[in-house]
Length: 301
Image (tube, rainbow, N blue to C red; front, side):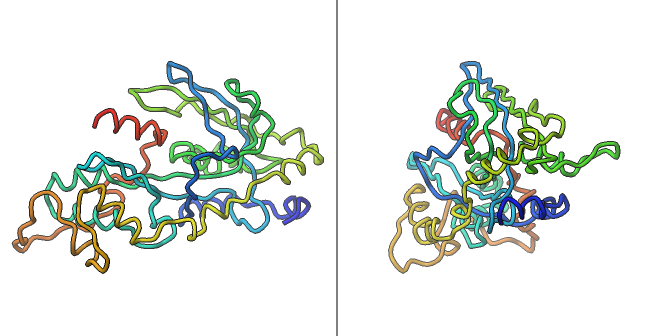
């Protein structure tokens, strides 16, 4: 899609809202990536920046992708921090284990499943308009990874709750809005409740030369949805068993056949066990910054 086609074929709100409720993509592991923008906070845990969410590039239907990961420490003291294969519609060993634990009917198993739950992340292109802590980022098109709390604010702008509010597509060059990211430290976690969109206005006052320059700098997000960038089921299973302190051998039975955790589960006596669901396990994102979450777990370990 060229810039001219973008002007003629701008995304409709209904399309984006529908896509937000469907499946997404994944993430490629990267330890150093100067394309990634991350907010900076002060010693008190406060931070501020102004971003503009940007449209999709040619070949990318949506302006965002989403993926899930797991981050927890096993009884061995080792950490399991890996992307979930459920991001690309494939079975994942941690998901299978969590289902087994939850459906055992034992409360301690359920608690273990909760600590190992998957976490939701989104990825999109942004134009950094203000970054007081890192002014060298201002004016750059970068990739921003964020959680459910910020995505909910995006959805609220596209699908407002009240009749007197006008839907806005934040990703639109002409009718979108700047996003004021406001971070606070609330009980040890990053909190984004104060973040908000400005009034809708054309980026760079609609200057098409500047808009086209921004469009030509957009990053291709397809790598985050490419199955080639995910570890295989067997690789993840081996890593999981090592973190849990279990023996692993080639040709071993499946996860559901081999993993035994906590005390053995007695055969149920004609009882009905509710199937594991995202709601019952509180699988939704906790809205906290991922690394802040991992750091808190490490401190508690």
